[in-house]
Structure formats: structure tokens, C-alpha cells
Amino acid sequence: MTTRDDSEGGSVLAPWRVYAPQHDTDLMVRALDREYVPAGAAVLDVGTGAGALALAAARRGARVTAVDRTYRAVLATRLNARLARLPVEVLRGDLFGPVVGRRFDLVVSNPPYVPAPGALPSRRRAAVAWDAGVDGRLLLDRICRRAHTSLRPGGVLLLVHSALSGIAPTLAALERSGLQARVSDRRLVPFGPVLRSREAWLREQGLVDADEEKEELVIIRAERIH
Image (cartoon, rainbow, N blue to C red):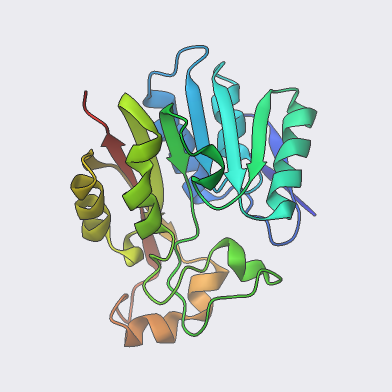
């Protein structure tokens, strides 16, 4: 069990195989700070992990629903919400599956997006929290195709991922679904242990240069126009 700062002055408990707050979480919270989230707004956190983004939205008075496909993440988020004394509805299921037919003012998502060689990791391995196929888009493409179905007119999607997973495909997929999408934030961060462990493979794939030591994170902001 690890404890990480949730970028909002509190902390979250993240058991093994549950994604804990990192640079991408902080970038998302900052983007969330700029959004108009009135009290009572309906917010959906897709792939909530330990629940850091869900808690950040709940602190703003939003009505928050958090979804994750693993029991560990669901239990961790429920525990963190209880410890923070914040009301968060936590559902187990695959992406938008548990909220079919519901509409939200804001959808946030920090899904697994790291390109990885070989087969997808078993749900019994820690890598399930970050690995997302050879191109890193296993979940990104599905989110881009489905996000508009959970947004009210005027609703906004905030999606974070690595530039290694491809920015242009995300923008194009969101535009095809009828959303107006753009890159709202960028941040360079040093390679963490996962990327350092597969630098040779990333170079072979042409995803990083020989002397590259930093990864670019991006926030994609997509709006469903009235």
C-alpha cells in the first residue's frame, strides 16, 4: 500500500496494481481547476485508479461518479472518498459501460497509455495500471469513440496521455465523434522507471531519440457543442 499526494492538499491510498497520483494527475487537476464546475455539476471519472481526480472534482461540490474495471481500484477509491469525507459514487466496469444512458457536464480520464512490447499484462500484474498495447492506444481509442455518448451538450472531456501514444490520432478520433478537440496543456517530465526500462525498445519503434530523456504529457480538451 502506497500513499501519494493527490495534488489537492490531501493524500490517497493506492494499493499494489492501482495507479497512484503522478505528474499526469497533477496536470489534470490543474486543467480541472480552469473548468467551470458549479456545485451540483455531474462529473464522471473514467478509469479512476485510486480516485484522485474524482476527489478533486468532489471538493468543488460536483456530483461525482468514478468508474474502474478492477476491484482493487473501486475499493481504493471508496476508501479514499470515505477518508476524505467526500460523496463519490464508485462503480466497477469497463470504461463507460456502467453509466450507459447517463449524461455528464464533465468527463475526466487518465487511462493506461504507455506503449509496451509483447502481450498485454495480466490483471494480476502492476503494469495493468499503465501499459496499453504496442501503440499505447488500447483504451485511448475506445474512450475517443465513446466519450460523446456520456456528455451533455456543452459538456467537456479532459483526457491526459503521453505524446508517445500519438496526439494527432486522439484529436482526429474525437473530431470524428462530433467533439471539438484541442491540446490545452503540455508538460515535459523525466522518464520514469517504466520508460527507462524499455528505452531500447522505444528507440527501435522510433518513438524516442537516442538522447531523449523526457516524455511529453498532454491534456486533450474536447467539447460537445450545442
